Image (cartoon, rainbow, N blue to C red; front, side, top):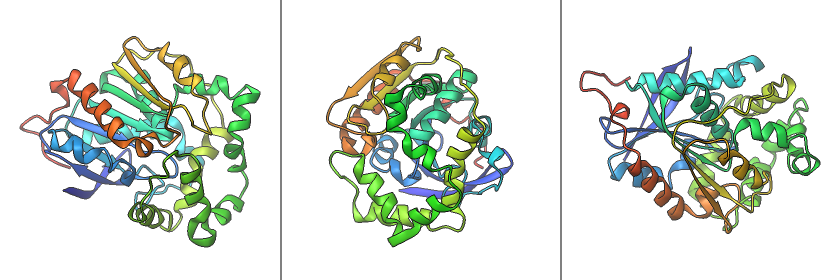
Length: 297
């Protein structure tokens, strides 16, 4: 059973879904584009059954979460502060972080700039931001990432994504999976998120803020225990970046999954769930539990 609430963080409010016992160790699950909190529902219930307190936000710009209008409100430092604020809001000094795609960029940055707030990092199909930035300079990755630059066009991407009940976004989901695992219920949940007023423009601000005002992330080492899970059939991201990212981690488990693509948590959901349970179970951290005196947000 899940609960949905509004949680204040970093000057805005996010809609947050939670599963599991609130005094259990916190797992912050950060989705990517064009998904939402619902994208973790093949993993979060199993984690919750094992006593983990799963916190699944619709990140800023998505669904019914707040949608600040300025590009600077979507810079990476701001997005990381949203995540830090969620950890604070639930009364923890740190949390386990599970993340994918753009959520992975937030997770990596949080872990490398504020390692004291992260018990473990599980990054799915998103490399270390410093590795990503350097690969974007290569012709091979530029060809894969052409769509990111198309998102810089004014208004046209929003029009294309809205047409025919968001058919283009649905196509993008299926195009980068192997098993085409999205159910009608999944697509209905996503369409509801995409249909919220201003949501598509806000979702695209993540790209526009990063590409129109770029900074080059440093190749900062990740000192927290890290698990990298990467579907090797990803059409957008070269899996070699996962190998390069692992080389920047002090304590890392790298899982390259041959029969999965970008949305690895949907292509091989049971395998990803087992990897998460095993990894989290091997790295218990009492600081991720809510102190008995803490109150819920």
